Amino acid sequence: MDFGDRITLVRKQKKLSQNELGKLADVSGDIVGKYERNEMKPSIETARRLANALNVTLDYLVGDSDTILFDRDITKRIEAIIAMDGDDREALFKIIDAYIRDFKAKKAYA
Image 1 (spheres, rainbow, N blue to C red):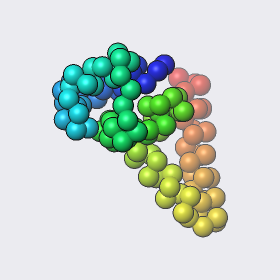
Image 2 (cartoon, rainbow, N blue to C red; image 1 turned 180 degrees about the vertical axis):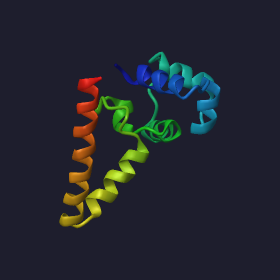
Image 3 (spheres, rainbow, N blue to C red; image 1 turned 120 degrees about the vertical axis):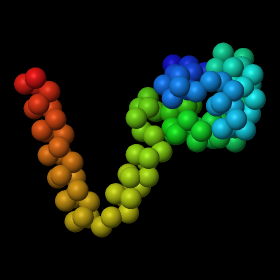
Image 4 (cartoon, rainbow, N blue to C red; image 1 turned 30 degrees about the vertical axis):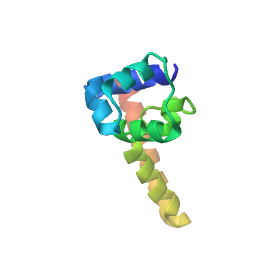
């Protein structure tokens, strides 16, 4: 998936028009359309504004990550986890691992 496809996908998931996204990112809706059709490539600054407006990482938009779920809110949480000391981080990972294990078990037996 290329840059234009990713913008289109996320924009539609968020139920935004090209004009609405353009206003959020401080570009025109027509320009958003050109980005989506890969007729133009944005500057780094514009790509950053688009990522912020769509609440995704710039890595996702440019294709360095395929995980759309890795949005800015999750990124902030991960940064907070990284800042924790080792013992607190390990305790949190045990809790997360237990939830993941339980989720997978429920899914397997559903």
